[in-house]
Image (cartoon, rainbow, N blue to C red; front, side, top):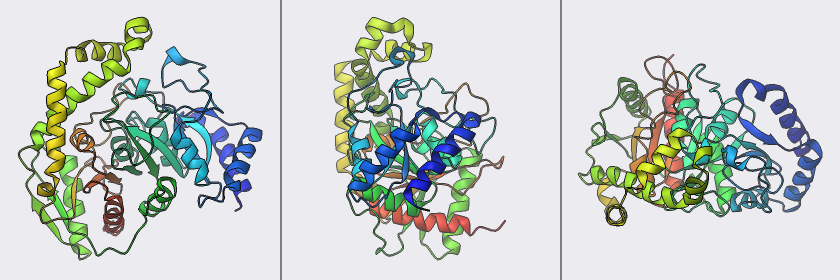
Length: 406
């Protein structure tokens, strides 16, 4: 199918089916989409007109950007965020804005989970994960400050990549915590992720020349014990990897991981109160109670606590070799459990915060399930700037999980 037909079919599919899932906040009309396609194809990028959804936390000149907040309803930025420009240079077409929680925090969106009916799709990149899960888009953009790429990818049963902090550009992103906010992507397969993330980033993340990596699995964590579903997912991953001939080793996390986990709260809170200072001080009545209360509490984080949190992060990043001693990548749960029932919560980022603060690349690989048969992702974590390794290991894991007995 040529790019023109693909674009037309995508727009028609969104119009016909997105009312069921409510993943989009705005979509280009046919005429504007054709103009965007012409611009994208003129550059000759390898995405060749691929339709892409972009989280409504990024500025877009062609569509309104509300950042998930009624405070910015109808807001029309004058230019595109850098990631939208990068997609266009790579030959992709931004066809619509996907839903985000309010300022990418915790207030749930109206988006539903296509692969776990009656359960949250997660947050804050709910629309991006669910749009890919529903088959409305092959590729979507999200962000992660705590766990907002990996967690919804786990809940919705799709591939989610949070690359090394700063690997994908953030200008034009409404910040929540600027030393944590990381641009990420959602696809249906690891091969697609490797190919398309390489095109957008301009880096050789698609490399497949590596030997089969050595996998490590930690069974004890300083933040909380494994839930039965999380343990089942890791046991499934270990069994299937070993059946495929991969080496899997049990590992212990360094003691300093507990400090990293705690430091995330101080860093995020201190930065969030400053990133959203005007919204909180001038328009608090237009914020959701959950965000308003969080910002009020986070204002108590002292400069000293923030500096200490950042110092812990810097020290830990310098010690990452210890984390990967004897292994190439680490496997952990992508989320605490299967997607929680109902829509009052987007779930917890417990299993993602430390890795976000460490800035390391993380990949959700779907294919496992929890005790109730709902998607339960396995998170692949690699050293800093080792996206190619992370994706190569993710491909091995994806194939292993696909081979599991029915």
